[in-house]
Length: 370
Image (cartoon, rainbow, N blue to C red; front, side, top):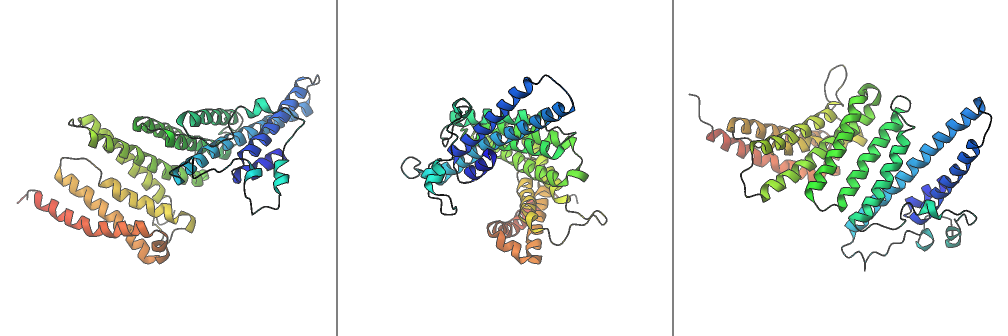
């Protein structure tokens, strides 16, 4: 019952009730653990109870982590959607104070979702039930959620419960993603992105795409986006600097581009037919937007390479053009894709007009071999 109630609560921003019911779940687990510790006879029935306890403890730890992750993401969204957070947005985290029109529960019912006979204060005080405003607020929630995920990982291993293990890693990467919103330092943001990359690349080394293609697709796409985020942080820093960039700095920037393109290609190539190695004319609807965005992202990434050789630069611009044209050709075959991505389609159309001019200019600047 407590876990079901917390699911309803946090979907409605009712973090007060969600935290209370998670604390009740943890309380009952602590009671059960005490009972197990007092058991004198250790037999098969006892071992089964211990196994079930470990499983349920891992599940509750994941729920606590999900609570923290959702509190971080909803706090981020709240800050992004309101310029004057103090005077305009007074959204409560108490279900009893929210106007919920899509539930049959009354305000009184919501106010009474409490376990009055249980002392849950110590468990509740592990984490706030209020929206987050500062980096310090966010960091505390992040650390708690990270600890809960590590606890869950002690039960869900790659060898025994691989899908759960992978999803926990994905939750870890999302924790860093939500935390960096509160971080103002670009350098620290880049470090958090790097931690996300390490988590995702490590898990990709351990799983077989044949059996876990769904997860691999998600990880490839996310990795490409993350490398792009680091790239743009580094490029902004380069623009602000008055010093000439070192060869090492330029090499790092180009390496981020290489990695972004590599993972975008892995994602796109995952849709190729296993027999013909051809890409389909139409991508399944749930993947269509990320598929086109990955191709378009490669067009943008190729234009970011920093090279002195004009022939190499020309090759990059030509490759960039081909990616933009690929998006336009797909949308021509599938008009609904254009409707779903009007902004992206407009950018591809513009770039397909501008880049041929840049290509011709570069060709004129390259000395003839004749």
